[in-house]
Image (cartoon, rainbow, N blue to C red; front, side, top):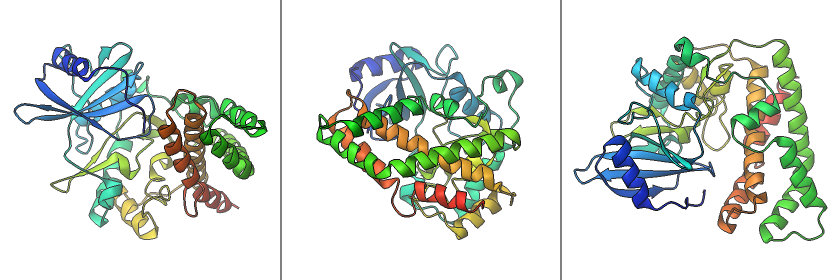
Length: 346
């Protein structure tokens, strides 16, 4: 998990009161997400009202806030959208951070809850509603469009360029002695996984080139809608959260999460049937599906490796990243799923 920001909690509370006019009296840090530049909190008032707070280092792309607000305002009932400030903005500047506030959904993440048939059906239907949405022209212009390249993928996810991550891993592997146990462990991981990772990168490039030559239709996508970005509230209602990666892309960018998933939650043939029935029984493009499995495998590898390589990360954060990195190559996990999707095209 990301280390806590160097910002007193009373300064965060004062910013909420100043920008949003909310009489927050208590702030509870939450251990959610993998973004090392973002932190989450539950903010509560003396009267018992609760809000979800996200604090990010640096600026937030406007599309990641305006798109869910547009969706919620235009009938997408499963979307959790940011609340406006007193001035009507969807964020507040708290230099060098950006502050956003959302309704607090009292519930459980889909991965921990365990999605049942009714949830898979609702998940598919909610995604179809998003994919069918036509944004206003001014908003559509600022939403990124899939380019099927490494450069766009790592820029969009605010990660170091892929070639820099690989160069760091290569240098580490060549070093006689790493300077910490975490770097030593990363060097050992790279020694065994290097051929697999480079093969994934090669296939990503080839699949991306194929899709650029013959691009599928692009639709509005959440682009990170795994079950940990789904909430099931106490009324058994499903909600979609965390729109940081919003993107115009082939529908398989989102459908991947219900068709096989990431290998860390049940998303087999039965679940896929439920999910696709909720969506409307679409035809699934095998090339696009394989591409997005490679997207996920490589972006996760890059993110976790970068966190271990980053000298400002704590030892605990590095160890957590190493554990996550090792799990990516476990049987049935995302690396295996990407390889299987690729073999399925032969």
